[in-house]
Image: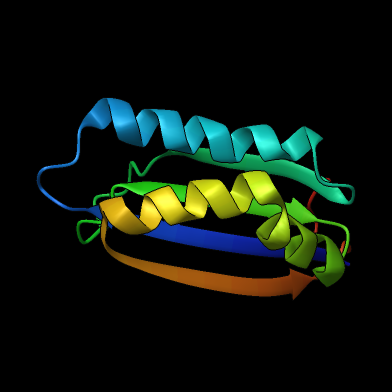
Length: 105
């Protein structure tokens, strides 16, 4: 089973792109810091259906406990606090999927 966390972000109009880029990079660096995290993608949303959600974070992990550890990691707590000051709105989704659905998990 693979566990996935996805977060979409829309930013306040006065937020600098350089600040968004920096905090997204900080989140991505958690991939090597949290046991059980398989990969983290953090970047710009390319979908024409984005509804102003310009950036996305996707975390794949071996367990829900690893997703919870990612959220509790001090570097994530720091980045999340900064994101909270930048975001206009956000949405998060957590789900699990079995490895036998044709992917390369």
